[in-house]
Length: 140
Image (tube, rainbow, N blue to C red; front, side, top):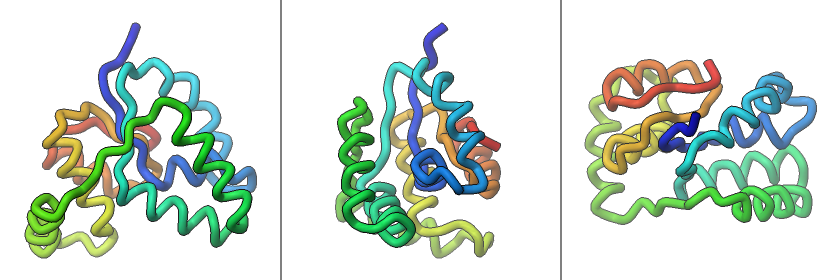
């Protein structure tokens, strides 16, 4: 059975790429299931965050190789433009949970706007975001 749409969060991508990450085994186990989604997305914001984390933890060369592989896997990168960014700033300023990053907020709002059914993440606060913005969380 094919699922509809999925957005990748940094926490999943990093866990999948880094063998000694605490969620690496879980990320690998989810990988086959995630292939059942017909449309897979990430955002330019998630890409930037992922590139930074991978570079810091693995080095620039390894990070670039892994990012190239990810980008060539059929995942579509959605771009946050200025008006959307401004809307997210307003929404973020009203959010009370200190653990929700600005990038996670943009992912949640982007999922609502683009009608993306699920986000794959190991960040627990996505459960709260999913309830408000109407997406399922995979990985928790």
